[in-house]
Length: 172
Image (cartoon, rainbow, N blue to C red; front, side, top):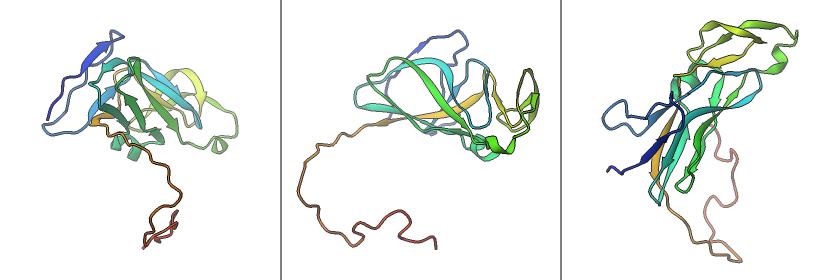
C-alpha cells in the first residue's frame, strides 16, 4: 500500500527521503549540519524537512541498527503526528559516561557514526561524537494510527498474569 506524503525542503542541504530497497519499511533521515555530541549530552539533529501526512498516519523516528551497534550514540524514538508541520528533528544521546573522562582534557578528535576517530576543528571532551552533514542518522516509518475510545471502569477483567510485571516472567 502506498500513500502520498507532501515534503517541504526547509534547507538547501535537506535530502528528500527514499527507500533503499523494494519492500523496506523505513527510509533514512539525513543530517543537514555537523553536530557534536559530548559524553552524556543529548542533541537535536536537524533534517531540514517538514512533512504533510494524511490524517490517520504518523511518522515513527527510529534508530539505525548499525549506529546503535557500533557507537555509543542512541536515537530516541520519536512520534510525528499528522497535524505537525515543523521540521523533523532527531534526538540523539551520547551514552559515553562523563565520569570515565574525568581529567577534563579537551581534544580535537571525535568519533563519527561508524565509530572511526576523526580530526575536527574544535576542542571537545574525549569520548565525543560528530554527526556530519549528509550522515544518515535515523530511519523513519510511516504507520496508520488507531485511536482508542477510553472508558473509565471501577474494575478490570482478571487475567492469569494479573498485576505481575517488570521482569516477573524471568529471563530464561
